[in-house]
Length: 537
Image 1 (tube, rainbow, N blue to C red):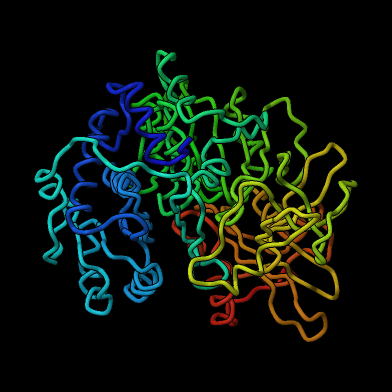
Image 2 (cartoon, one colour):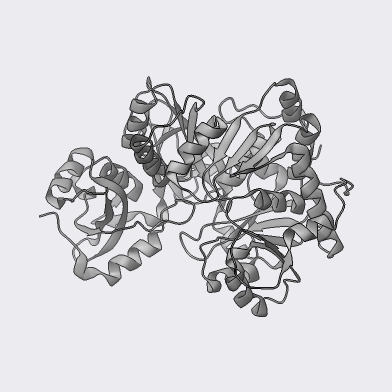
């Protein structure tokens, strides 16, 4: 069986051709229309000599076209690569070169950056421009004209579960790295090929489409993070493979999200931690929206803090809140479900799946005893490694008892109830006087304060302890932060050695487009603005 991204989508098209597939603003397409448009683009790519193994960039906000490019690329067994739309020209140049792109599809608003990059990236031989209403120059071929010139017929060669999927990391800990997966493996790990609640495998490639055919309507799902993020890509593909309707908001705007929920009767929102969940809550309180269709909010890849979950459940008592643990390198490693009846233990907790374990620093398995801390690891369906970086690849894999584990560097702690508490990326762990402090735990405590809108915790140099805990904090609109009072609040929640010794009050937090923390930017800000540092007493 070919568990292939394009094949799975085409099975859904054949099952529910006239069902709405994607909605974005005032535009919408059915499954049949989306398939035909993707076929046209696939034929264009093939006519340009682009085929198996070639890399095609998509440089766009969330849109119908962005999804079309991904699907079309997989139809001809090429590889889709998403380009971060907030990158500078130098950053785009790095990604285009590192990913060996041979074609690039971009929104016109980014045309000036593309024009600056192209002279130094000669491998790119085909450029298509998606019209977005902007009046930026650059003479690329117009996307819609390219589609209009090609056939909508689906007549492509047989595909394979071994076809490549490539996802670039956000560059949180350095330059972005391309994580390579077999398509079946990434679908199993991230895209619904394994039910992460029951652990059951999807048995055959038509199963999801057959279930969609039997269902009178599909799930309406709104992935809010950018499609440069694996969580958004696989939320979209999971919805499409299952016969659902995907609703895009081109760029995150909290009030527009609630209007979209009301207008399109959205069932599930996917967010990236508090960076999206917090503004959504504020916008909901400030407006008036019909959210009766909404039954779940799920967070991927960033902290969804205990305090914010409680606030959601006060407003939406029947809502399911879920945390999905995982990364570009590991896929989904665990799922946490929170309802109004849940035990609201401190810290983000998930129940690990059968492929997940905690490893010690010497790569030995850690027994699941309460309090034991180790690195999250996953076996079974794991990536092939980093693109063009065999040395870095070696650092994220471990062989344990004959099994190959991927170990991206996230730490967690076993709890008495069989769950694990997520502690955060080990590379960001702060060693203060021999004590380890994980930033996400302290960030969650800070954001529980009513005057704090967002927070990032970093380590700064300290002559006595080696490192000291410090924090960048963004106040809620109209609030004035009292650092002494904030210090008293946090010391009730976490141990005293975890409390920040230094604070920077910032107007806007350093976060990537996906909502993930940008720790390098936070550290640069602290280093460059030492004169603005404040002490709690």
